[in-house]
Length: 123
Image 1 (cartoon, rainbow, N blue to C red):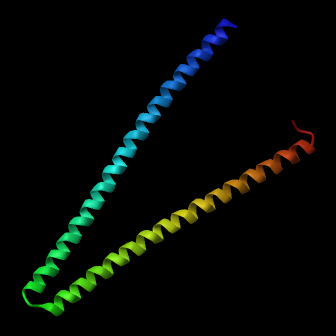
Image 2 (cartoon, rainbow, N blue to C red; image 1 turned 90 degrees about the vertical axis):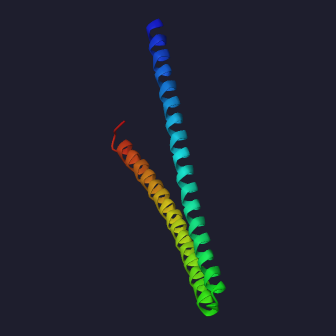
């Protein structure tokens, strides 16, 4: 009985250590993801600022029509990027839903197989 308790304590200690390692890894991954998101946002902001600067400079030079066309083009591309982002989010949601349904169906089939096995006299 003492040996069983000792083994259980050792197993729990190893498990706690692995859990701590997983938490550390998850925090590192979350930090890296946050950094990536910040870099993307910064790049996007820099591009927008550069585009805005170009439109203003074109306008200042007296090319009003070209500045207006550039502004419309920039707005169109920003809207297009936003549509693509929303589409990716929608697709990801649908994929998660499909995976969940497939998992539920697999669980039902597993339960049916277990029931059939029991009916045939298995354990």
